Amino acid sequence: MKLAALLSGGKDSMYAMYQLRKQGHDIVQIVSMLSENPESYMFHVPNVHLVAEQAKLLGLPVTFAGTKGEKELELEDLKRVFQRLKEQGIEGVVTGAVASRYQKQRIDKLCKEAGLESLAPLWFQAPKELLINMIKDGFEIMIVAVGAPPLDESWLGRIVDYKCVGELVKLNMQYGIHVTFEGGEAESFVLNCPMFSKRIIVEDSEKEWDQKTRSGVLLIKKIRFEDKGRL
Image (tube, rainbow, N blue to C red; front, side):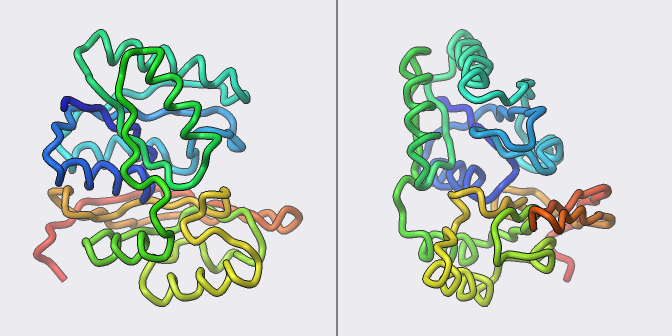
């Protein structure tokens, strides 16, 4: 099936794309939404502009579409994008929905209206196992935003490894933090995966932390590509 991937730069959308590629689907285009609203109900915001750099490593064209990020109205912006994809001969859209019914139901509806298939290969996968499989499959994932206590500033810039997964499982049991951040507890950025021709190295970044809301972002300011053969 000829597909477009709705990519945010984060782990779930990238891993969904990876899974469908392994199944033999032809992903020919990336679409990314640039939301003006940092509290968007539908779209990932931190460092989303760097999807353009990920696209280079994937060898795929990327289309950016703007949205003001207003609840429900942002769906109209996405609807227009899906209609254009259909006109271009795209048959379906890949998304990284894991447990958010709010997002999945709306994307399913928009795809149906546009005559596209909606594919969410990660839907309702067990969160702990999903993260572990990402690590096993060679995904290097950096946490670039946190928005729910007890996650604090120390999590910004952290790489998701097995120790991190264990801590998230404990936080889930104690505080209800979703292990894959489906509740918006955190956001991520993929630095490396099997689909990339090279890995991304973050050379400069800046933490922005709001003590009042106990939330913050890691703004990635400079990156470079590095051959995967190097240590």
